[in-house]
Length: 203
Image (tube, one colour):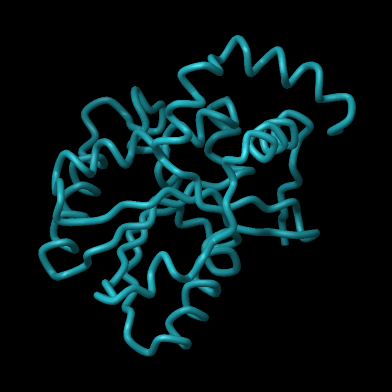
């Protein structure tokens, strides 16, 4: 089985996010509330990532609650499709509109919570030479896009799944507002300089 290992650049980005306090452990209390809202998941369809890293953790929460339903909306590249000027979307393609329409339908069916899940490493990101931090940016851009559609009808949370080959994997919540405030200060130029300083210790 092909298992992608983290590159030095990806390890550095993860370390930067950790040190900034932006990677929060996934807490089932985000989903198990008084309303017990059903959850729609927007993520990549890569089976190596989805089954072990997303489906299994969510099914464990379902087994605990016996009440919450999970509805996956998967695409190759996941939230990268909804990122600004995404290279994954061919000219004339309706894939963005199709995904947004399916999301709208899920909310109308009663799914009151949405989990946007990106992952590092990402095969599509590497294929299109997308910076690891821009994978996280795409999760935030996806939230903005979907919020425009449904506004207060749905609560949207942002998550990052991290896997290092077969060695370990985990999934973290990234607070939307905190990340945007941090990103305003940490431009691509600043981040690239930090990565270069960290890479020797992250290889």
